[in-house]
Length: 243
Image (cartoon, rainbow, N blue to C red; front, side):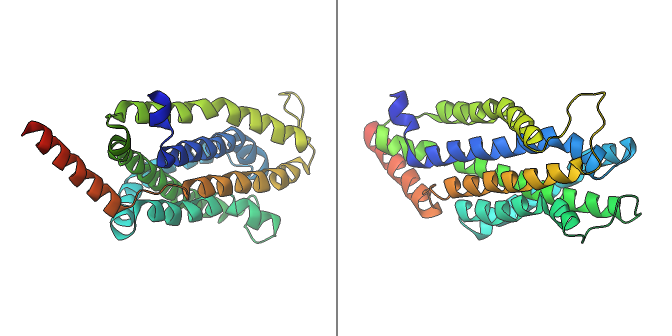
């Protein structure tokens, strides 16, 4: 029964998407400390303010997710919000490598970086909200096919996917550092060009992870009309069984 429940195509798409995007998020989180300290050379106070950008991003994300879900189908909304989020995430690094971003120490650097991070976090959180909303539509689709309610199974599996990739993200970060020949020993100072080498390895890896995540999401196939039809079918079934 568990295998039958979890083989639902839309759930498999969301599960794989959650695994891949979670891996990307964990990879970025593990390497942020290196970029903040060595690539951007931010002060501890500036790093703290970057973290606080999440407090600005969260309420914006709620409004954005609600609007996007009303305008488009949930899958289309998640793709339209998620794609720019995952492009914006490495954008400052890409622009710096191209010589189009303020240099370290420039007064414009931190406000620009803070704004981009806040916008990106808003889009990422909105995407996560939409993904959770998509999971909420799966139990009815599954019940039509299996005759069983399985909300707990679906949400438990989704949470498992999020937790499972945190360790893989740290492992991936270690591999990226190794490829870039970036010293990880606390007492070893990195080479002057080490931060640039790290960026050149990190950006294509992160973009590849996010592209695969969006491809996996495209296999989700429950539309708004399908969900409403499922609800009506289940309502009819229950009324018939109670008659």
